[in-house]
Image 1 (tube, helix red, strand yellow):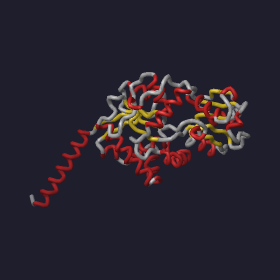
Image 2 (tube, helix red, strand yellow):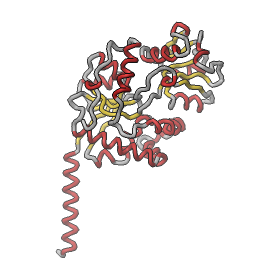
Image 3 (cartoon, one colour):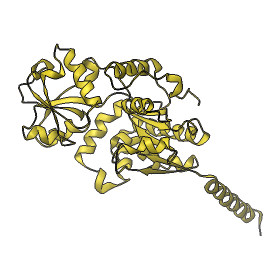
Image 4 (cartoon, helix red, strand yellow):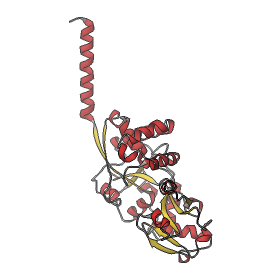
Length: 318
């Protein structure tokens, strides 16, 4: 055997050995999603499709929930490594003594909005007096609507609330309601435009509601800050940067995860509208913002008292 051939064989053997070690040392992470896969989950899907998780020695399983209320509960019970949740939901879960910590952020500002048909006579929130407002989930949405109304001299007593389940835009089309609260500006507004029934949105953070983080990663305190979770968050940061640098190419990567379901006009528009709200650095957050929002929820009767941020915000670096 000549030296050149020996080097080739040795190099191949080393590559195979390294590959075997990498696979053997891969760590599994289960992430429970908050909803069906959509552009809000862009960094996770891009990380998977671009091989970033595998490169970091992670085998990540993404699970879409049958019941969107379950993921945080399952994470608190250590049935999964991570769950995707919402800042308002985490406040309620902590108030109910669920052991959870926020370890990262995906979407760092609200997507929630109050929506009316663009051709309606509701030009401002003042015009809602005597109108019917549809909602999907009581509690937080009522509180948001109440705060928005109060900034314009109205209260919840000035409107009629109707539970339309998740048929937000259809209830507007049918004339069942005059407005809906809880519509995602990246989803319902785009769907309405595609349907030829464009909407007009009023944003809570512009009408008396403190800003908050829409989508976050939560974990049991025993899992928060562990090496594999930190590695996972590093990959999410890497994927987010890829998306922001090459949005069109990464959209193609995103839809390749499940082309028949994901490659459509609604997701193309939602992708465009979601990207500006993606967290640039998933670990970064503002504890003062969390305090302000917790006080808002306390004042609205959604939680008994604001939790201490030290109890649920993971310090930078774990």
